[in-house]
Image 1 (tube, rainbow, N blue to C red):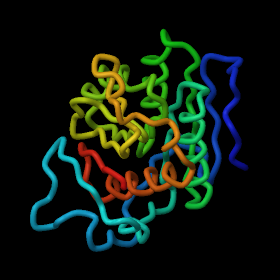
Image 2: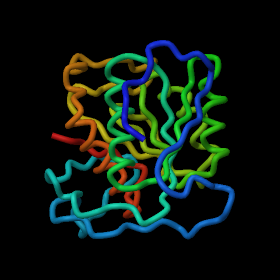
Image 3: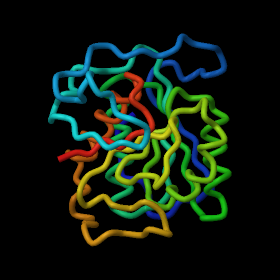
Length: 219
């Protein structure tokens, strides 16, 4: 499946589509593992990050890690703005490159955000990757009740994440929920395909290595 820009207008409230190998998710599969190892500078093994900590990995220290065969990911997305489109495209391009089994759940209206998060969880993926500021507050309401489901938020973060919610963002990607809003550092121009791709890869590498519930800060 070729990556493409998300449409500006979504005709249905939820879109579930898939690409990659192993699209039949009805059968159990082996617990995913990390293929390869994190490079020096991703984090300090002598002092592993505590919950809600922020780490700033050395650039490209995650390049040697990829998911094992059959990794199941749901891309959960809401919004047709350029930032969200860039993030979503980065996820689909990563999934194609790594032959990840990817399904996409798209929410079109605010009143459906929590339902669509539930739809993503019901698919029982190994990881839910969230793209779009509109999902931050709904995720904060839902994720603490599903501690067995891993989430990765890219280009934003939850103000008080539980151990199953990891974030990957950077200066310019400052949204933490409506109550906190955008900081003065928020800059839509920083949402480049290259940076979004790094956020996906660094974030997934952290999750695969059990470094969850933290913020991965990219230069």
